[in-house]
Length: 374
Ligand SMILES: *Cc1c(COP(=O)(O)O)cnc(C)c1O
Image (cartoon, rainbow, N blue to C red; front, side, top):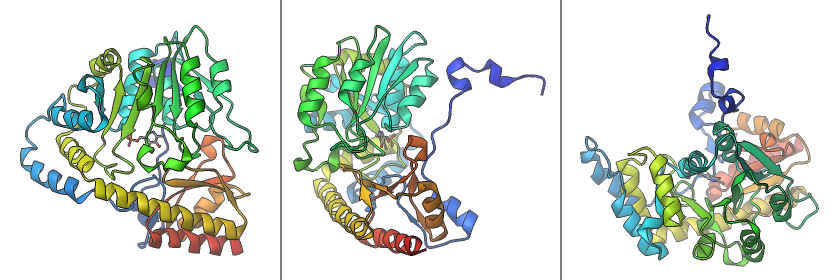
């Protein structure tokens, strides 16, 4: 090869490390010849999507030859009614991942910097670096903090400079599960200058229990025009495979995000499924109840093994194994259970486990029991 393509790539892309997804079930089947596999690695809804969403998808199959509504009018109308916000504040995305990228594309250049926390969602460094901007990573809370490894607002604020254009906050955060409480997040938003776009990523918002005091930042949109709240249908709504999410922001910010997105970034099946899923309050409640029960089930097992875990307001638990998480991950694979190592997040002793059905959780518990007895 006479051409070194690496040297031709944009500077940010040259050293970019791709996102590491949870191991797909089909891959484990191929590699280990296993058939009875439980995947608890990507924080998916173990109950699947709402039956109403399934019906909507089936009905929309006849229109696949047509382009989707590039403005997503019906879904935006449904979201606007549900959230009590104007449609002009909405941007739809091919998963909320798409929206994080749109923010980077609209606001970051090689002259700028983005701030996020240590152990924060892996997509923030990726979209920052791909845009050529500088990533400023704030130290997370120490392990003995009430919210161990969680975002430290003071550390994040201390990194703000003239170059800062974006701050990413995951609330609750993945993979830790930790969150900023109402007063903390409000104080942080108050302290950030208006010229810095603050993205509050609420991918797990639907799972948050009232007593956690993990607020939705939607309530502050009127006060902070630099705020962008992102949500997804991939987690509690069980539509990860269809790829759909949304952002709520000041209309002027929404206009900018809409300028840089692909004209048809959300497909037609995703649009109808999401609108139908929004309507199915019962399915969402069932999903939340399953999560609540599963959370207890996993925590009880950890307690019996003498293992600690990070506080979690999401549909997953980040467990401190006291030994290399990746080794336990491999041992689990041999037993047909896919969990998520988080060494790439700077948490080499932890393992993240998504909350499944009671039977799926039991499979993890049984496999762990076997490994720990080792
Ligand atoms: C899963 C996740 C997302 C987005 O997922 P999409 O499928 O792209 O909507 C965003 N943020 C966090 C913190 C997540 O864990």
